[in-house]
Length: 129
Image 1 (cartoon, rainbow, N blue to C red):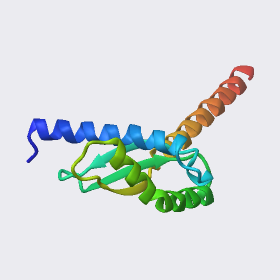
Image 2 (cartoon, helix red, strand yellow; image 1 turned 30 degrees about the horizontal axis):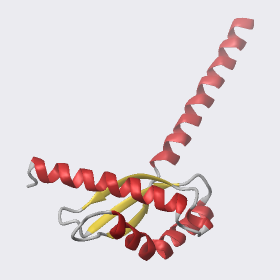
Image 3 (cartoon, rainbow, N blue to C red; image 1 turned 180 degrees about the vertical axis):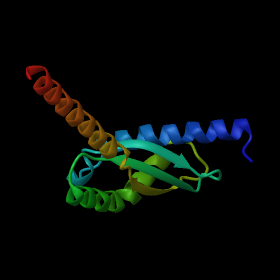
Image 4 (cartoon, rainbow, N blue to C red; image 1 turned 30 degrees about the vertical axis):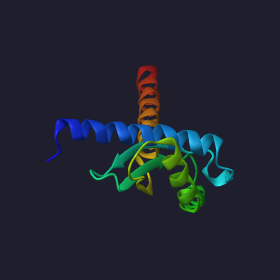
């Protein structure tokens, strides 16, 4: 069980990794496949050996595939840069995971908007009769 202090430190490390990776992807990487992504969350293991990086990108399945390949290709560079920027005894292995929650939220929002618009049309038809 994590103590409050350990949990707090793990969360701070995850937040710092998220900020640093976002900056590295935006300013330091040259690969166009990884330029337009958003780091949505980072989870770090208790021993800091692994970091699961959740990202999102607006695009189709091909763009998501290309982005995942770009991230896998840049993994060594990003980890090396993190080790220079952060004062950790161990720099975690980076595991990138596509975060579908943003896409799912956008899809649900569109469905709701469509349903509201359809309801307005039906109400207008009923009031015209």
